[in-house]
Image (cartoon, rainbow over all chains, first blue to last red; front, top):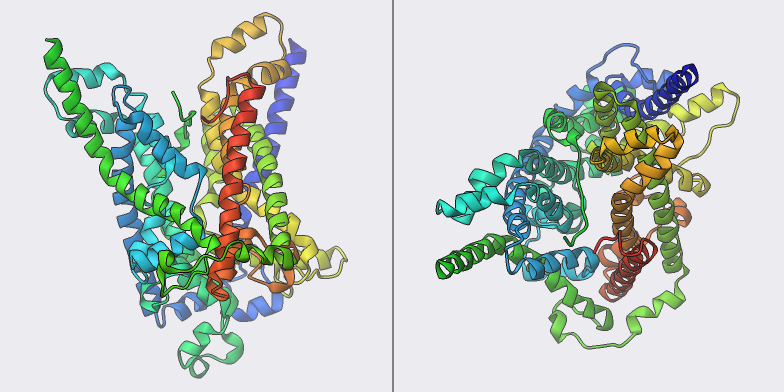
Length: 295
Length: 307
């Protein structure tokens, strides 16, 4: 008994050490970016990047907010894409996944296959590019950025797995009372599967907020670029910001906080996702359940 | 009565179909139309003439495969990286999930799950900036640590030899949290009585892990594996495009199929070559996923598989 007690404690220590080490790896880069964003250009030149700033300096943020129009515009585009994409995407996918979760839906098999096949075989970049730019003519619209994540097989099947947990008797009972299928979904299924719907919404929201590839392909109008893409462009060219205004007049050249400005932008780009973290805690941490496609 | 019931059934089937319709339209337009577009691989595509109007040119678009070593390099890199990612992500995520499960502390589970999911919250653009704070030659944290312990500064962004390790590490860093949450959810479904009866029969912790936990997790592991094998010809574009800061000097270890196609399409505007690579990717991906599923079914005697 003593032996097993000891091995229990050893294993706990080992597990905690390993997990805590990885946790540190997850957190340190984030701390370093935040701290560099609060460092002055001069202290960076003297001491390099450090994990904690010697003194808090807001030059980088002041610098970015001096001419904030592009940044604000990019924020607005990202918010539009994220909100529209998440709301429409989750609605469409939930309404698709619900019938697929029903054993008594005659077309369930074939529609499941139609959706599932998109996970097996894809047209690829070139046909999709031609579809979006030439046939749908969505170049330089937010819809070109929304479409790629709108309905994805993986998310549809995640939702279907959650919907399957609702006992069929509940649906049957509402049907006998004469409720329509749409009403059953809204009144019975959705409330019972809130964690699942919230989980997929969160994944979609993250996906949209962090997306830049559609913008790289389809957007060349600088007033239509989302935040991540705008940031990417700024990173590409260290002197991008410098070229924008008469900076050298206002700052001494060595004070131009290019490095810390980059970090400040990263903070501003990733920051809003903190708002969805409480939802993560509430729903997502319960887990994502997956199952085989058939069954 | 029977007649009335079937009337209800037909009505509800129609209603259910109508619910699926909007999403189905998106699926058909966005996924199925491009599937027919793969014929572009065999055409001399001219944007002005459209897909149907452009002339056929047989296998001409595929010729570059035999001329350009860069194409093969990108295929090799994609396959090697993805193989390593698939194996390591599964091993690390399953190990972490089992550790969490064994800790049996609600607080610890919540804490670690939340923190491990942090990297998944960040876009590759932000991650690239983060990595830069570590790898920057002059000010970077890693080089400063190296000089402190007496080594020379490493030129991270110009020396390709480092990147297989950097990219593998970063891929795991970003993905392990997500996979771990899926595996952990799988573990939550295991009946605790299995462990109780095993312990009564004299099984120790290791035996429980290998004889109960892992087999119970097998179906989830298999599903995720098959899906990622189906994507083995598709690289995570952000990882390879953003993190090396598009440094051409690193291409020997950082170029992947998707990057190659992207350059062919956007930079060179060679639709034919890009479509040929895309065709290769689609067909190989399809074959891989069928093969993976077939193998999984065979090995598990029909018990596990995606479909």
